[in-house]
Image (cartoon, rainbow, N blue to C red; front, side, top):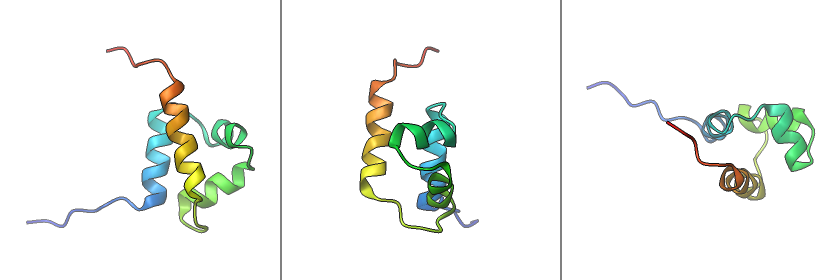
Length: 68
């Protein structure tokens, strides 16, 4: 059997952001941080604060449900 390649925390954060239709620029503005901060979080170069995870979930909860 092949190895499962788990996504890094930064990659999971980026995937969630993209699934919500947000750009790094938009997310940075929503969180009040510089876009370079979001890029560093997603690259795993700096630890992402828990508040960023919670804010992303709050943004997700505020969006209308996706239509099929």
